[in-house]
Amino acid sequence: MSTQETPRSRVAIVTGGSRGIGRETVTRLAADGHAVVVGYAGNRDQAEAAVKEVTAAGGRAVAVRADVADERQVAELFDTAEAEYGGIDVVVHSAGRTYLAPVADLDLAELDALYRTNVRGTFVVAQQSARRLRGGGALITFSTSVVGLAFPRYGAYSASKGAVEALTMVLARELRGRDITVNSVAPGPTATELFFQGKDEETVARLAAQPPLERLGTPTDIANVVAFLASPAGHWVNGQVVRANGGII
Image (spheres, helix red, strand yellow):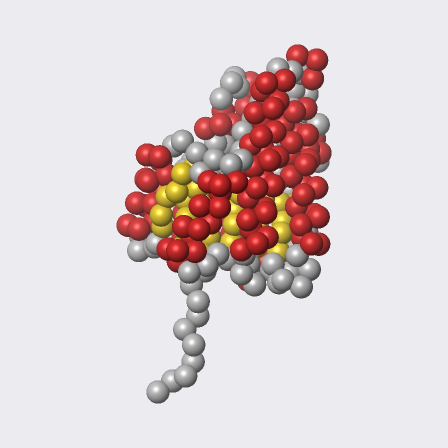
């Protein structure tokens, strides 16, 4: 009789997993063999559709509603992952919101809502990740290449994502000795439903022409980067911001 142990299945939580980059990440991580907990805020039908897609392909997934800025709901999200699948190896925090306006015209109520989701939400998810990720695991947060590009009207959004980058770097160092990586992915313009909202064809074309590769990114492009960082192959990358933007400087 062989005494060799069966490799442990890896388990991933993906916040914002019901659509866009998060949805594509769910599909990719499931294809890579992860059991996936699909976190969502309000798009229950889309989250359930993501679960059905995974299970139809032979994978394992479950959808859980959680406001990422609510520490009790996020704790329950992590509880579900542990109860369903025995532990947590990967957390991909892709949930977020966008608000664009010149600084002079900022609606401060919108600013507060943006910071609640993007900053407080990232701290809440990072806190649970730091407490619960197993050795060999990975936390992947989301920033934006706009932090470096400094586009007009993106002041509030860029500032919130700058906070995400700072938190990511600090947490990577705080987890010394735990064999857990913490990185942030910073996409450039990416063809998602959210990206196209409020943009005319001229604006979309201008943004698509900026990278040397001369196209918009796709959710698959970004999910591939996330999958690498989540995998053992990407485990030597730690405490980094990966600007996945086709070469925009």
